[in-house]
Length: 545
Figure 1: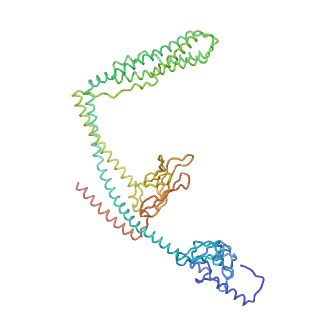
Figure 2: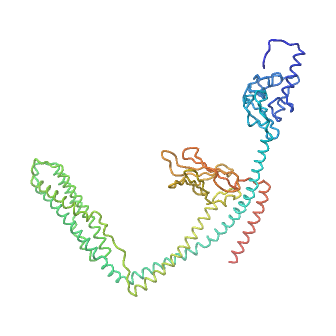
Figure 3: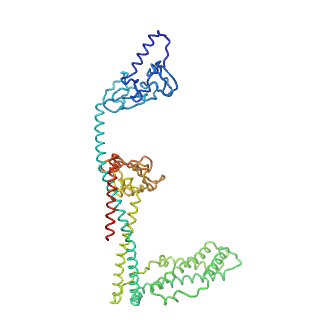
């Protein structure tokens, strides 16, 4: 409230106060900047005083909108920028009323929120009243939005009808599939038993012929592997003899630690070997051709490991022994080691990968008797495969239906029609895709997983979360927040990345278009009645079967 040093006569002061009050009150009997709903808060008392809205002070009503901030809450200046903290009401006749901060009043800027120009009333800036034009455009946009919502609501009613009917259908299908489980499992078990029996009959009935054919087929491989094993065994024996000679003949008075270490390691090796006297060749005659080949391969691997162990002992001594001692036994062992390494480098290629010799597939036996057994076995296998396929189909059907029935498609099953439907959005660099209730991905030259459906956010059923995507380099796991809005088609309209590796998909769909409440209630009643009728029909058909 401003103070003045000049005193006016009482009558003149009262007249001026009344004039200011009248000037500050608009046609709705409230000071400038006050909305009609708040006009009741700006009424002077019986002595023409007024209290700040926060109750902190009482001032003359003439001090309201006097361009001086008297109240702590700024409520005395709703029509000026003196306080700058209040709200200025723009009537915007022909459009929609709005409020702006009082700090923007008479600031030389025509604010869009005040299409009537009332925020610049001091005359310094001319703001035309464009509310009729703006209002007409807004009404056109509102009509368009209403049209979209009406069409979307119509489509959503179809979604709801489909979702509820589909839930009944899936429930009935699940019941049917579960009733088939015992039958298909019994058929599968019978077919498995029959296939096993047929296979055993074939193996037993053609045993002698198959073994003869197999022996002839594997004979070259067995001979080759026997030759390899013999050569490797000779090399191992030569290294063992060298180390045995070193142990017995080296000069123990020299106390060469490298030699002692090698001899000690050789003793450990001998102890680990035990007293084995039998060779694999002793048992080969009692084995089948396949077992003979496997036994030879296994024994060759053992001998090669022994060669590696013995060579490591000699090589360690060769690198570290004391050359000044000129121990003849040590020098002889070193020479053997050098000679061995030269010859082994060229010959060990045969042993570098013993699996170069691979067992071939067993050749079929062509006798009529064997053919008869084989045909029976193949026929039983076909029956088993068919039974297995039917059992798998039933179990997969049960799992798929249970997955869908356990999904949260909203209180009216709206989203059931969209489950597993996929949508793409292409920008300049990537193609983004989401399969609703499934996975979200980013595709370019390769595919990057952005997340898997993890649930709804909030209670409005218009925001889905997809989490657990591929981890960003030096960042979090990728995720997607999918925000839905009303539209007449279901499509992704934009994709952004507000935070690193956190994507925002905006999807328009009829599934979130509002339906008038009364229509929802009536539709729910009709759906419930239809579900009862379909359930009774399903029960009747099931009983007839």
